[in-house]
Length: 67
Image (tube, rainbow, N blue to C red; front, side, top):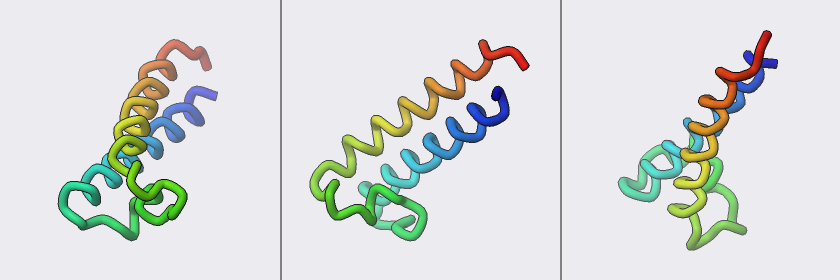
C-alpha cells in the first residue's frame, strides 16, 4: 500500500508541475493532462496548484503507512 501511495502521489505531483509549466511557458502540453481537458479551460493554473499540493500531501502521508 505504501508503494502505491508513493507512486500515486508522485504522479499527481508531476502532473501538477507539468500543468504549471504549461500555464507559465506553453511547453509540456503532451505531458500535462490538465491542459488537454476542455472542461478545465480557464482553471488550469488553479487545478495544477491543487494537484501539486495534493501530490505532496499524499507523498507525506505515505510515510505514515506501514508496510
